[in-house]
Length: 483
Image 1 (cartoon, rainbow, N blue to C red):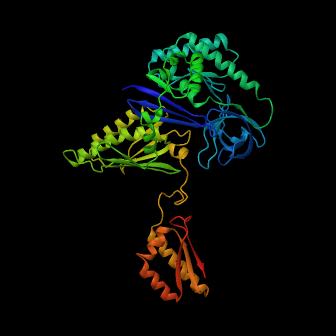
Image 2 (spheres, helix red, strand yellow):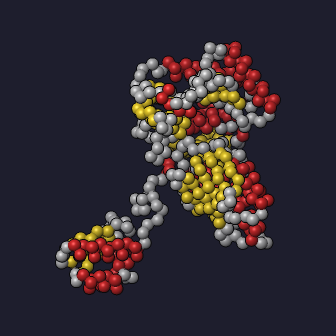
């Protein structure tokens, strides 16, 4: 099986799927009317300084003000992080979005600006050159750092700040690095020249998602990049030729009549990614519950009873669950605190093996994450960096029937609420009769299972009760109208 990148582009939306061995591993979605903001640089106005939080709120022209913490500044020789010494209300400052607005929260921003190219990240406030931690060989790290320092001393000595070497730069030549530095230098000068005025505005907008994939991913490890839009393919080809020549040969047009995401079962995986339950091949399953505070994942054996004893069955299920949930974190783009409730294991060796399996599975994830050990309650905590909306937040909205609870009141509960409403009205006012407006399931339940109770309420209040269908009402909605 091959490893591929699939690009499905329409005028309204671009979707990119990372497929390894025929299985979806990660998904990126960008809509033309709701583009991601991470990497954008703004001229913003400080509207509120909060010393108690050591933070400030900055108006950058979005619906909600952005959040800036004192630690997101850098000034040489300063140890203090008192927000009052860094900004004041009414001041204009340049900031960059590091986390998209999510739910009711505004964007998270930093004053440590950075711009990226294929091999380097330039940071005007950085004290010294840095190397990606994913480049592990000491000799290569030293070679790359020497190249950065040498080139900066030769050509960019007047340029403040420094460069971080990205993972994709491993084994590159001096000429390639110099070309990247020249590009970033020109881009930074253009950004600096574009912001003399004091008003809220966008200074620099990051690349569209189909260009960011070519820039940020080590695309050469994939066998091909298939694009179903000629226009998008042309843009990607031009970008590759200029900034990432090694990926240009991987690009190809997909002309098939069958949609490319259907051909690779990506559409089915997206639907599974929106489901609470994920079935495992063994018969076990995972339950995902996403809240604003955290995400919980419950592991269950389900129908899996195939091993010699219970402990072995639990161990095998947990191993499979560790692999499956690591992939689901990427597909669903879950971030923040993630609590995994593995099935309780008595054997310490089994616990350690499950943790190691989970760690290895998460090594493929480009988003930073950290794992705790197994707690006394048998829980494992994962902290995964949250930068953009999850799949559920991007593709779903709160259910109008259940208001996001994931449950609705039972028919019996709604019927008893109707009875209480009628009794309350009858005590307060003397009406001749009552008309109940409700949904079809509620009326059916009242006239069938609850018919005896309806008759008893009518007898108790001495009034008749009639029912009328209201098609627009959900199961929980009803009205009691005096007649």
